[in-house]
Length: 272
Image 1 (cartoon, helix red, strand yellow):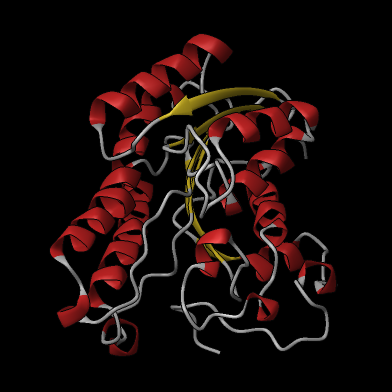
Image 2: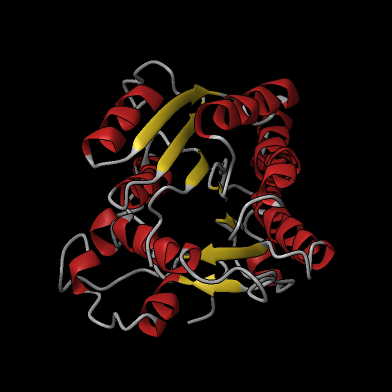
């Protein structure tokens, strides 16, 4: 039940859930490709690939900081090649990078629509396409995408069609790749939180109070539980963080609350 010596290619790893997954794997002694656009500090969003790489190494892992826009095919393929050159292969891809815009159709600029489509569904597909030749050679390969269970329920589409389309796009990429590579030993699954997760990006959304959320650590621990499982025969699933942890024997989730005792707000795309 360890990721020691494993190489993880994690997108959107400069902050939030991606960073938390990287640091959890680093404690096992994993090799982490810290992949994100954030090469220099942003006054609104703390964290860069370099600061996370330093944290990974301080936690006991090996790190490679890779500035990469996953919308750009050449950059993704170069980042994958650099990871393989540094660590000898890739065992795990974590598709964490995502763009969000929670507005209706009349309040969604096409520039924002295009960004979400290119980062979320297309970016996840591109990263999987680039990593799969190496994953197919790994002893226990996983692709884990931060995507919700697919849903056609109009209540999730009406308030923000563009975002739902982009996020469900990641889910359908997961579904399709899991079916295509069924029987080839690669575990391809989705993971989604039961409640809101307190990230810096969430703090930028007006009206959202992160006191009613859990910390990214719950997603990191759930991801760790998934990624240490036997890959063969474990694919095409859309997993929920608390259910994964319960299966692993973790039922006391109070430690993950931003403020224990506060009521938790559910995340999008899950029924109560």
